[in-house]
Length: 180
Image (tube, rainbow, N blue to C red):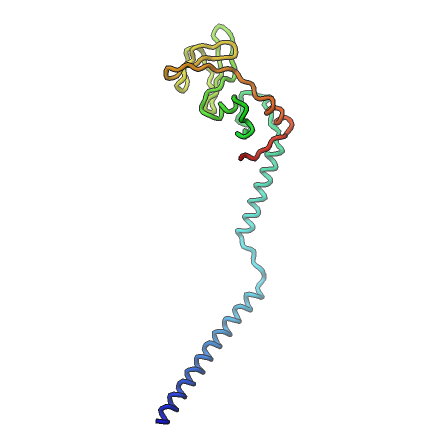
């Protein structure tokens, strides 16, 4: 019986020695890879550089917008080139009307056949008495006002000037472009 126990013990020691050699070799290979990666030059991930370039570009665009002065001298009815912040215009009914789906009277032209320019949904409509546009019918045009009819309801529009505070802020560049 002693020979069986000695044989079993010797096989167990052989198995332990083989496992020790195997795990030692795997550790050596792993350590070699770690050393190779540690000695490698640092790598810059491409996404970080792209993100930095995008942020720089956006900051430059924001600075360019802040430095821009807007002028409406050429055509005061053309307001599509002006950046309008809703927060700045809360007290200005004419601009709020143009931002919403309500018509806004830009001007009237007196004469034998009076005309008016009405702005609705970012379009200027030149209309006369009896004309229709986008569901509205013009019933009367007088000095600086127009009467419209839609779905049996009558509505009177008046020419509204831009708010003095807004014009002053635009001229002096004191606009806060952050909208909350």
